[in-house]
Amino acid sequence: MTLPVVADTEVRVTLGVDTHADVHVAVALDQLGRRLGVCTVATTPAGARQLLDWASQFGPVQRVGCEGTSSWGLGLARFLRGQGLAVLEVNRPSRQTRRRRGKSDSLDAEAAARAVQAGTATTVAKTADGQVEMIRALRVVRRSAVKARTQAANQLQSLLVTAPDELREQLRGLPGDRLVTAAAQLEASGEVATILAASQLALRSVAVRYQQLTAEMSALDQQLGRLVTQAAPALLALPGVGIDTAAALLITAGANPDRLTSEAAFAHLCGVAPIPASSGKTTRHRLHRGGNRDANRALWVVAMGRLRWDARTRAYVARRTAQGKTKREIIRCLKRFIAREVYHVLVPIPPAGGKDHPAG
Image (tube, rainbow, N blue to C red; front, side):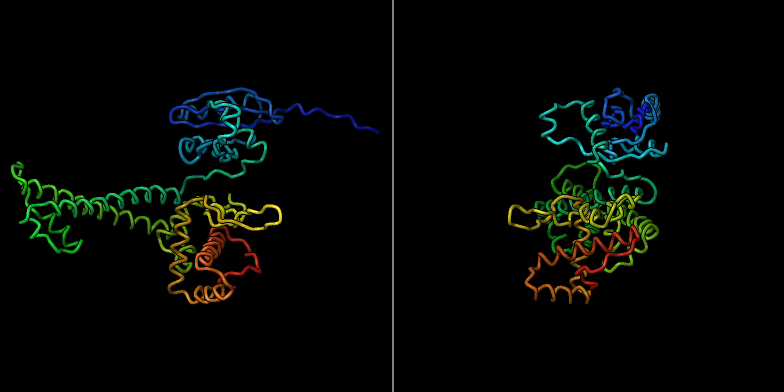
């Protein structure tokens, strides 16, 4: 007996969004991939509500594929998550796709929706809220302050080289901190009439700027230390992990690290997962050079610190060296192990056994 086929008449909507600074462009698809419509809204809370109301008229919205969930689309992603929707991060279309299909906002939005339906976009967007987002914001400002202070220090040395002889003799040979203090105390007249007066004013201005940036960095460091300690005390307890490295790893994982499906996914995100590069009878792997470079640097800092003082790591290096591994290969293995260790702290799960790592 053949059972009758019951048609599924309920439309289930997949939404794709191409985000911009002033407007968002969205395309709605049904469960069969048919295009239902296009909508353009402003990048405001009212625009986000308008977008959801427009999509909901076709049927219940199941998933949303969104470009730029950490930049232009952050506000929209927050709103949609607040409405209980699953928001997935979608990469922009590849160059090959754009050459084949063309480039427009609606085409990019449709590509985002189809990437969700095809299963090629599976990464849940970062929530970008709570302490991790606070850490990210403060760390962005601190990094710019560090760059500006380094530039000020270089300018101070450069101005001193071309300063008049009497000023150079006064400041020559002073170490960095004393040079900044002495330059900041130089007299600066109201009206610049000589090269000496101009040099004094320039040196004093740069030295005061250096001191202000140092004070700004100290205040930011204090707040970052407090936030990181509250957010991830277990991460700071790992050997070699400090405030800056912990902050970088927290930002990479996001406030919802459970969105990472496995420790291998986290290692791939940090750029320390080997990638298959086999062909024919040749079976090999190559180094993954993508991922978050700041997280990769943080893992390198932890690895180099352990190489200097951690007994287990030094014993591991000796064992792998005897096996014929080079120092570069050993450091790659260390970074891969540290990524596994960090992941199990951020997302506690039973660790996999049988791995060859320094703890083994």
